[in-house]
Image 1 (tube, rainbow, N blue to C red):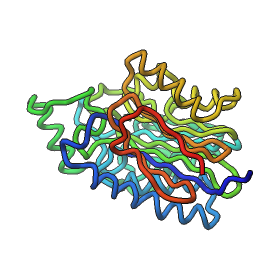
Image 2: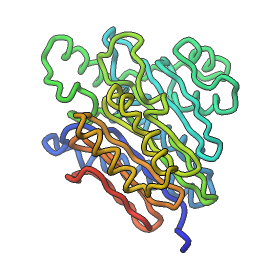
Image 3: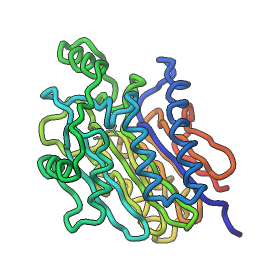
Length: 309
Ligand code: ASP
């Protein structure tokens, strides 16, 4: 039976409840504003790799999310962002770690797809941005600065290491697509977990946080240290390659993470067109389009789910 293509799922982070903040409707709308136009473009033949980059750019531009504009500040008051991109058919991973002063870190990851050196850290990212002629850009927002100042004064209560959505403004972003040609791609972009020490490396530009093969593609969010120790994105994809269906791959991987007390979430799609998501955190901010109707995971209590169109 042939599956209607394409498929798309995007996320804006995971964390504790949004409900108490009244933030869910606004976050849902923000996710749909990315999901729907990019899904349209996918339907018109845009390849998956370009679709996930476009989705990331839009999410990086939304100051509500912790990536690009609106990234959180590190312990020294600076913003350093990480992003990665993986092309499923070629199993090609590229990324940047702790880059500053760019509007769309995902563009640097895209530029590195065709290079011999495919993951660059801080200075290398800055040099690449110069080579590409990207104008210097300050992603700082007043809201993030005030959060950081309050935190410094010990005035804010940070739940769950403060990673993502205790306030509606937080949340690493990511996108996974399956295009009309049956090709998968995953992209992830983050400002990090906030208040981290200098030089801390996020999962978002590693195969633990973002991974794709011809069989499946996954993007993660949550505490980067937990995601790295679970090697979550690669673990889910490899389970699919070893014969599990996407639902089983998510269920087993998330059950293990839950047992080990991890705080994380993930979204994914397999080559058969199954869309999946999972979380150990209270909330996962994800929205998907299965070719039929759009849906989202906001307010879902269970820890994983899939849908096949
Ligand atoms: N995973 C990101 C990090 O630890 C944070 C997040 O997903 O919000 O850098």
